[in-house]
Image (cartoon, rainbow, N blue to C red; front, top):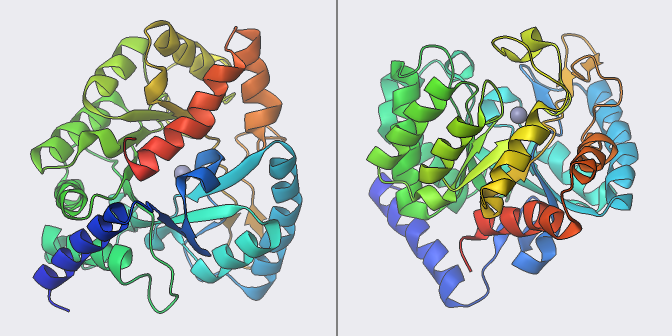
Length: 339
Ligand SMILES: [Zn+2]
């Protein structure tokens, strides 16, 4: 299919879904309605890998997710957004297996991780090639898996405004404009977040569908407020981590850093723009091993949202209604659009 045809088809597909009043979003096992989403962790990873995942690693990951999936379900989780792009080891067959055995909804992403991970031809292909690739994964699906991407993962890093990131941000803005698909970002400094928001705006993205992830890293309350004046959502992810070196945090970071920021946003009445997740990232090593990437906190799996984050928020006076808004309503609005 030619790029222009593809883009027209994408826009038409999204419009048709809307017109039928049956707004849906693809999960790896088929379309979901807004009601099916439920409690959602909006930034997680079933597995991350820089090479093909081996059969043994696959078995270990299935075992891990069987245990973790039942904990998450006991705590009311219904959906996980897997933000692993293809360049970071996205494995749709594995995602399907985990979704089947856990009965959790898993939504997967198209897009790109930071410059060093992107394919060798990314720079020469320019924004048009990246746009065509992402659009294809929204419209036709991922390879021959029959699975369509639910959102874009857009990661920036290195020097803010480097050529590779600028290509990606232009492609993301254009793809969002054409398809209406939501965007979820990785940006770990105020400089990266400012540049990202400016570029997405410049290239026509609907900013109400943009979630800025890791927005608690190197952040102050004032900076988060600035981000939310221009983008739809922040996603806080560094809960409980206190070793600044592990997350590129400049200076000290307190265990309650993210909770304090979140409460600051709540005091400013910005509850409709806050989401949080753990960013659990089991990482396949060379050979057969898997590194759970726990940031020196033994229990820091995706379930840490329930063993650490919620108890802390409740202690700081956050209500059940506010928790529902952040874990159910906001992910639904981000993924499905307003209304
Ligand atoms: Zn992540």
